[in-house]
Length: 335
Image (cartoon, rainbow, N blue to C red):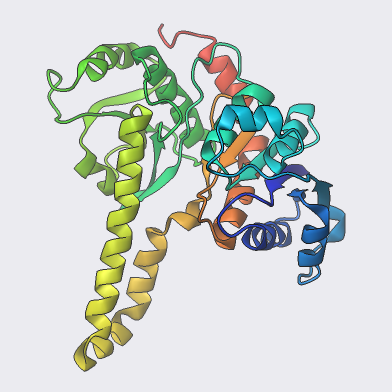
């Protein structure tokens, strides 16, 4: 049984969507148990609206909530009974195998490193969301944890991301690429130029060179390596353009009788396309390189994304990804 702590009080739609997503997860997968962390009375009342296996749903009381506008380090230090801190401590003690939170990104990052703890030899744990492509999904690493990363950090990101895509997503030889402004090796800033030869020397990854941002949606690589400032810009633009295109398509199709007829005929195909590029289908972003799994989902996550974030924890735990990363990072990646 994989035990997943869910921060019931974090997120724009907490606790309703968090609780609903957790219930859906335990109903879908009999190998998952959920510990809902938050204000017990509120959670217990909400749970009366659902049917679920009670032996696999536990409430862990936490009286405080960390808000997005709080300083993460101070909040983690002062709010010991917050849902994030209590949930992280459940993971640290081994009472939970993973935690999923839609709450403050800063608090999740600080709590993950300060409470759950980094693996030995991991210098900077990165956030690594899956982004949809025409070929399936790619892992964008890092997207928000390390805005001033060094070359040695990017090399570790590449190696951790490769393990994740191989053992969680089932891609036997993940293609690893470094985000750049061109395919030529002489292009790029100082960080890219310093990182490129180091990645070429790594024998435990399939490094294919540079990738431009426009090639990411076409699935030209499985692991997209960059520092967090660049990664976050790519991720937010990705989400914004996707949402804008879907909105424009809907308006065009529903703006006239001819468009409505065409929309009716195209609906099944369009539905599949929209689903493929819907980020909620892929759960949250794991914070890789910790002793156990910490997953940060969007603050605006609905029940579907929460459910998928919980479900992805089982594969991560069963494949012992943290142990594999620990073993990998202890070597230098060279023959």
